[in-house]
Image (cartoon, rainbow, N blue to C red; front, top):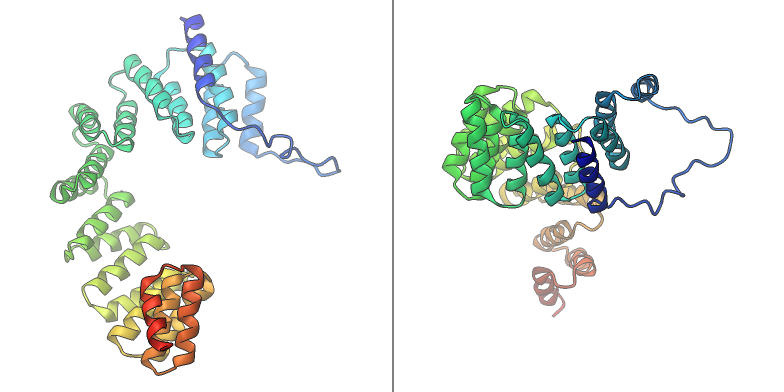
Length: 337
């Protein structure tokens, strides 16, 4: 068995190519600087040195390297772990994570199928196969594997979340919401499920959307996506007071260009406060000097205020970034007649 798995792992190495072209550049310069390694890594290195035949130690260090996004080192350690013991399903899960990170979905699939063959009740392995099939848009196959997990554990929140993601991609919003709701019923701390519920409900202008975004914020008070999603919901349902408050709450901890742009839109179109609108558009441009929509919107604002020269300057700036921006072309042509 050991010899057989060595051949399999070596073939994996041949399939997954990690770039080493810059390895010479990454070496530290020859000076007096001392390289300091993290304590966790030093401890793992020492334990492996003391017990070099312990496959679990190589696996644990590989998991550490995966967390650090050092996938080549992780792959090297997984080769060592599998050469020592090829019978442990969790090893193939880590191997699949490495291949997936390298966008080698076919090789990741082989590793996951091996894990499931070793232990067909390993829910993590089956769910990762489901996730892989979701990634490659094979939704029927993904749902098939999810249902296998739910037959093993009908309260698995991740399984319901994954099913919801499949239904979302299949444009079956009702089933997607239902699955996500079941996920948060099973795990009331499931941040990603609350976010998806907020997004799905906001798209329908469903009044439940704010509560889902607020639950996500309760779990992560500085979630940019949750605060922005909440503000955008309020904006879309024309609750401009709450939209302004929410976007400003976001701006207290994140210099978010889109929140600034949206505040400009609200102050221009809805509040009719052109001075504040221009300020927010300008703030958005300061964050992103190539924010083409902000230049155009500020130009419109200047044009409305009869500041012809400033409007022309903004339309030209817009077209300098995107020469095909049709609205700016039309507006500039009209002003230059």
